[in-house]
Image 1: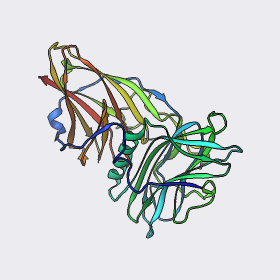
Image 2: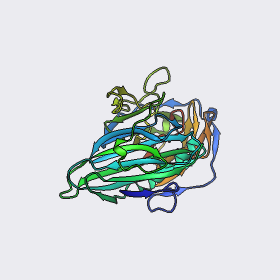
Image 3: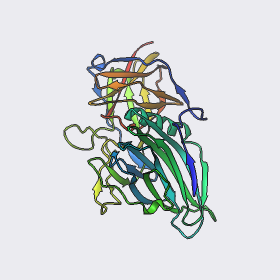
Image 4: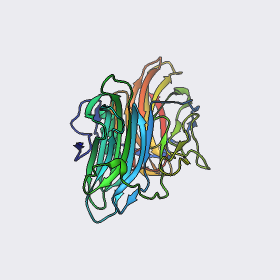
Length: 355
């Protein structure tokens, strides 16, 4: 068996995008209103499978949480809290269930354990964001061999993880099929792919067709304050979902029933922001985030910098960044994902004023 144990989140000391730790500036979200609802961008689903493990979210007995087979490039997201009296390891095991050796790599990995559920999610997400562009060899697995990526999780602690794997044939590099098991254990099982799956609770577990969304946000300074909801509810009275934002998934351990990843946990939004400047003279644009209807710790990558929030509630908006816009406008890149343990959609606000 091959093991890689992460004691802390992968957010510290790694190469990749820079991270901003400056003191947080927040304002009452009411101060950004009234605001215009931006035209909703059409999103395109891209990338491989997403395996989501959030049920049972709180566990009192060791076991598996979710399991499914995947091929080639895929992402695993989990969020589980140890409600037992014993410390355990929590994470994912990848098992080569084929008849030939498999070369396993990671393409982004973040795992964190914290007493605060949303901090665990934020730390894991930042770790993933800092490493997602590096293809890192993990192991070459013989048939029947497993690779573990886990972290110690004490009683009362939440473990969050987001890891993207690439499984390829060791012989020729073609996409290879493996089995992923999200689990907890006091003693490492020899066959994680055979560990019984715990009964589900009201949270979601399932497999979804794609792990990324791409699209273009368009904002014109003439609009004044404007906003767009991301990770809004998939349905119901609070839904303000974007076209193409949600996909149906299936629960591989419960008869293949249809499930919805409400909030799109584990899904990355890789967005272009096209900002037009109708004033035709320099402006200062403000970028804000408000957890409408919820709370949490958040992370946003704007161009090449990763920004992390302190604790936010629905009453406040986090001023992520302020930047100068030239007379002709500009193009920007944004990456974001709802962190484990955070609630409510991420409402992005744009403001602008004379330079």
